[in-house]
Amino acid sequence: MSSEKPFSAKVFLVKEMVVRDLKARYAGSGLGVLWAFALPVLWMFLYTAVFAVILKAPVERGYASFPEFLMAGLLPWMAIQEGISRSASALTDNAAMVKKTVFPIETLILSVILAAVVNQGIGFVVYGIYVALLGHFSFFWALLAVPALLLQLLLTFGIGCIAATITTFIRDAAQAITIALTVVFWATPIVYPASLVPARFQPILAANPLTHLTEWYRRAFTLHVLPDPKSALYLTAVAAAAAVLGAALFFRARPHFADLI
Image (cartoon, rainbow, N blue to C red; front, top):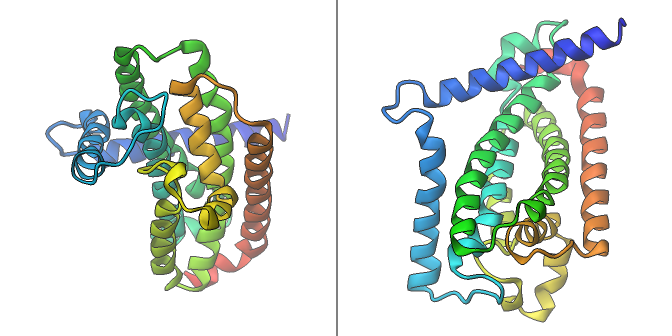
């Protein structure tokens, strides 16, 4: 019972922190929470205008439109980018909480990641309606996105822990992380099909776990095909390794955080 109470208390704490984060995000704005629905649509129009209309980016077979191809990768990326970038400054932004010895500071990382995922879920609702209007949506196949989301959480949490730890020791790392995330975005076939990438760069795409995650979501929402076993195994292994290594580094460095902030 003694081990169950701290766990349930942490779950309650994370839930409250996520709710507080979401409320603070839209507090004072005219549209309020409606921005969570509007922003994915605005990003969809922007990227579609640039890549589909101006640059004439081709759409792979199986997709009725560029937005259908785009959003399955863009929505998870937005959550991952937000989760990692906010995790990097989560400890320094909450110095008072970090210095409290009894406060579970890992919840600072988890809460910002989950808040980003909540917004991703709202975006997926909008995206799902759009895919349904195209006649491609299947509730059964959409459930395939659930294990992909769990792996996304593991991957983001692991990298977020690493980012938070490094940034606490080296403040300039926050800027490097921002640049690295930009590089990863363009190294992931989100706004372009992987078939456009020259053969010599294909190994880079294959090594990028987000390539496999994006493909998984596209198969769930549109293509209705199970993930390639090797791709699924690779993504699972990388996500699990990131979570274990990130958590190990974070908890090993934890005793020093209060002195560095």
